[in-house]
Length: 443
Image (cartoon, rainbow, N blue to C red):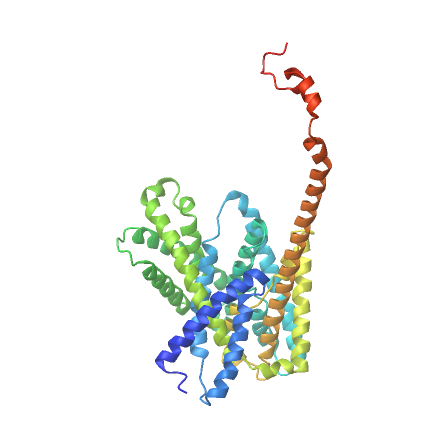
């Protein structure tokens, strides 16, 4: 059987996309993350491939490209949802603080665990391995929180997006510290971020002004190509490229804010809003396709056998416990007592995998088991699923209680309201007694 023939590949890709669409439906009904179902599908396909062919396939190049494109699409999709309003500045800053403290504290504890339990692990390498394990997955969170209350949904969009961006910046800062003479210190790193923000704003204004003048209908994938080009060039120049994508998304989603005052004459509002709406649809669809194939291919590449290792389970459980203990403390500090189901929504996913494969050769540790990565991804996804289902059941219970109280109240007053007036009394009463006289007639 020729599994990798052109027509078979088309059939296989089509079936995977159809299944992914069905998984989304299952996810909405059960709160099981569709990403988890895609990974399981990849694992099943792994056994399928081993049964039908002995040919070894290197999926890593495809996984890396899909991961980068998926990351760009997911961050852009999230940025297009964010409204920059004065009343939202406090939630945005609070989400940023929670994401940053959670990232740093989780990475620090995970690094200590890895350093203590894995032989030949230096502290610097431990931080490099711990950082991907400490980043929230917007690829899993954003599609999963649509059913939550608006303020909780916004919090998760902000938090996961900031966690992605700051986690990636932190990871590449640590990579740069492998060669301190080349990367410079924190001052250079801060200057790099400032330069990226300036370039991002200039590029965002230029893109909007140019694209609103293009009359061709086929321009959205041209726009995406420009963004991918800017991201890749930024990476080559060691800039924080994800900021370019985030800032562009924020500018186009909040055009009236960025084109206020004298700049408003340069904005064709109707055409710019059309670009925004069409870009939103294309980004959503593209992110869906890329995310689907990324997690299926990830499932194809993972080593299931490493999950049964006692040391892998122990290290993973310690890291998972630290994640939720830190998250509980941070959320209680910044939000208060209303931290459910936010406490449980802390899955690891696309960026965790992508950055794990980006660890430089000189920092890699042969004794590190990739099963830790898989264990943490699966466990945090399952915990999120449980938390979402628990919250859904709680909401249903509260609604049922409200309905029961309403029914009881209705029944209590129903006899008084619906009790019929005796016929003989009705005949004896005049218009005034029945209350049917016209206004003004009663003196």
